[in-house]
Image (spheres, rainbow, N blue to C red):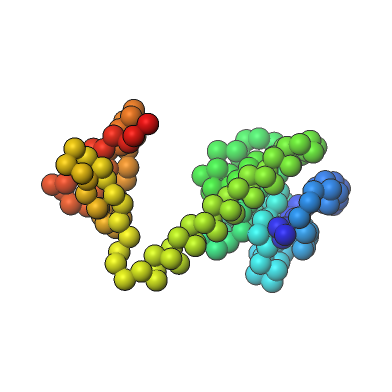
Length: 184
């Protein structure tokens, strides 16, 4: 069940989004707030999975609230706004979606599905990290090459760059870079 906090300075907009959300399965509206300060209080009290947040509200706006939520355990964010001029900033804050008011039901449903996918990815990542924490040896990535391959400690990987059918793996060790062609 996805726990959702709705935050909007306009009561009619809150009501409209709540009605749309109630028609979706496995969504539980756990609270409402009408300004940014109340939203932060409700976030601490309720620990929702998702906050649907108006960008422009009385007092502290939605972007300011979201800027305080950049830790990994904070809820996902879907912004709603009457205007689209804040879209770039919303995605810099890593919002899942940005919806314009007078929501179409399908757009809200799409946003909820994006949140579900992201939460599933977070759960898989958390399980992987938990499994790795129980291992005695550090996790490695097998890099195939002409000589059979190398087991590269994951902690040495800085980034992986796609090069067509190849992957260029940049490591912490300046003298070592692996280029591997993955089998089709």
